[in-house]
Image (cartoon, rainbow, N blue to C red; front, side, top):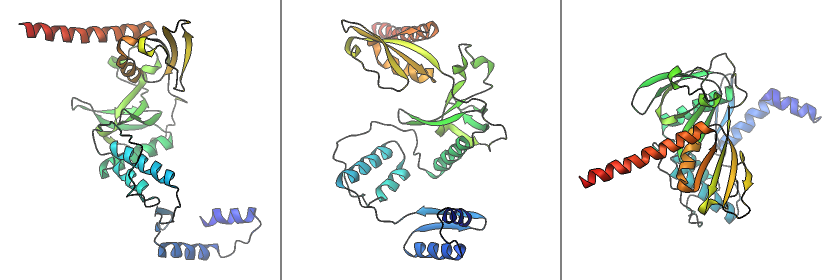
Length: 295
């Protein structure tokens, strides 16, 4: 910090003598005012918590309170409490009436989960391959070697989204490299190993183009996602065709099936067949159930 501050002052033409003593005195005064600052030999100063007063308007206080409420609903209670400390807004009740409909599997701010998320964030910053130990829904554990990775929040659940350079041969569909993009629920990650010396091979996640049609109640749909655009709109407003670039086919399939009869995938053909088969299986479930009731 002393070296960085000296360089800054020299560029500004300011004196830089006795910086170490001046910095130590300044840190001491800040600590005396209530700032929590950690320090150790050969380590930079770390601001743990600030007590600097923040002046906020009522709208800003309401916005922070709402953000804290949504974070809490998603299981990030520790992060929510940090927001509430800004401007001392713990007593503020959001007036928007907005309520998050989330059912997170775990408390992501628990000590164990907080450390796990911190490790994953560090691996993503390092941009080098690493290994995780993952327990699937059946309780079976396996090591996964990961390349490009990213933390993503989907439907209130935190995932590690990663490119797997060498997935199991039985798990490859031979459709495109997008099949090597995997989702790992963070609460099922058992261990995160140190980063290797091998840099990420993938400059970005593989993607695939999908064309789908919305009709009926969704015929007036306007593309709002950055990776999708309108391809064709029927002059009579009976349907609209959307082309989208996706890196996770599983999440896209979840979303499109929620639209029911108002959505239909047009391309690629293998995805058309997958979704058609899923609807067939759902229909058979209801049919079998109905026959059982009659018996």
